[in-house]
Length: 400
Image (cartoon, helix red, strand yellow):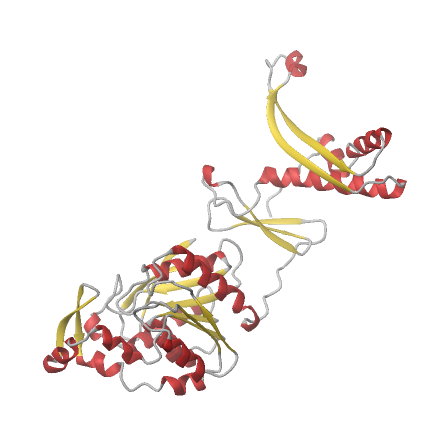
């Protein structure tokens, strides 16, 4: 679920971002730094943020100063300013959903999160995606336009077919960084993701980053992904790797305030239908299908009703079969819910009303006699949930 957010950086500029929230509980919080001249709406930022949210990681991607919807001039922005913006973003998260434990940086954003990690104490893991070892690598994109900026102090340059105002301060800010020293003192777990076919930032950069860092560190190849992660599959793969890799480096999850035994708690989320179900120390999502406006992230309420009847039926049959020495090898129960007209109700004078029908198709595996199969069918109707449903239970509701 997306939330549009904004916060103020150290220079008083309003920075605009997008916070992708998980459909259920938040496992961790991540801060994403986009690539040079990109925005929070770039392919890489958008795809990675959404995929991480699906894995329970709330992720903020925002536009650096002078880019996208954020205030300020790009000409006044530079590498050090990007780092300062990341620290401001971490402060915003700290005061809302929680401080970021994970910093993810794409391309030049990868170099920026390495530099910013030391200023975000809650950060325990850093991830770079297609990142340069030296921030000055970005000057390669300017080519012979560097001399123009140096001579004029500030000039319009073309990057990726788009015009940008670049100042000599920007050139100075990306030069002379001791990234090797930063990596050696990182004191955070490091994951390096890079494509061997990256034509913008060569794979040798990943090797230098990895070699300069101390353990714990990992490298995973992104196959033939392009630099901007324009294809969905590599971005989803990268997010799945991050979500799995980061687990040992996160603080232990806070225990859920579980409801008492025998109780079930259902809590809504920001999504239209998605809800969190807590029961007996277990937690899962319930939802509705896409075709009715849900996100299809869990079983529907009627799926859960049928599941209750089906599991109780199977458990009861198996228990009785074991007790009576019946050679039952397994039980499968297929259920469905229908609303249909019933001639049995015609005498009520209500004119063939619809009634609720729960149908069970039971499959018994094993060398059972016909008498034993009949016995199991009788037992099915005696399972506790079946009896509860047939007893027309009274539902008591109160506000608390």
